[in-house]
Length: 258
Image (cartoon, rainbow, N blue to C red; front, side, top):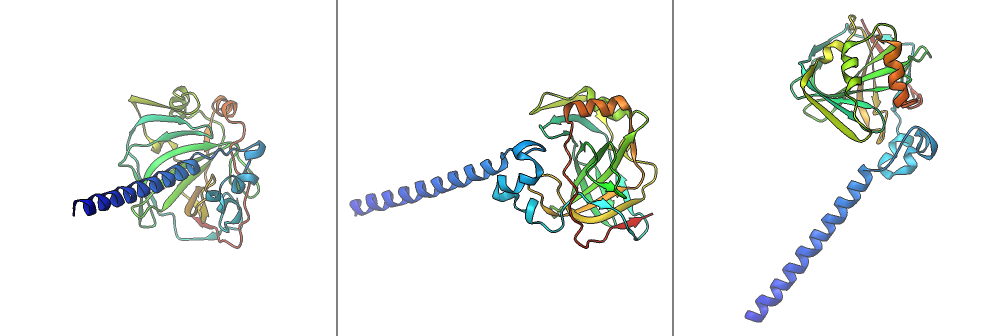
């Protein structure tokens, strides 16, 4: 009986070590996929994203990809976006692709009855979307997620004009590439990034960065924001181009909500 128990124990130990090994291998694979290098130029440019990892396959094979050229929009229901943004401690991330501001929990947006929480906002230059085949100097993306894990992005084109004080605070606290700067004694409110008019375009699209996941609800303001020439220049010195090229619309309908 003792010998049987020893053999049984060895088998259990061997099975346990095998399972742990498989989990470690899986964890390593997932981690590697999450750290695949991609970019906007050279061999890692947007036309090559799908070749960099199987996880990025939708960047080439996806049907409902973003960004797109906004034109021929059909009239939709009246604008029904309600913003409930609260102040958040300033947390600025320089991730090597853009400047991102992480937002504290508790701020939400209601889009046609669906509630989403604001996760972060970030910038692209030039604008990723076009409106009637015209790009803007930059584009703002406010990224939200609901309880089901679905994403909704509220975007705004950015033109040269009046300085934005919130952006000035962000720009002054940008860390080195790959680092995060938390300014706990400084609060920002994303409400200061919203235009007066809440009219917007909407369509079904995707993330504009790998893995290019689809099912993202896009809502792009008609009225642009403004940054000063100095503010735009400051961003372009860090990221000359961080915009994905336009993608085929493939019969999707763009609605205009006034």
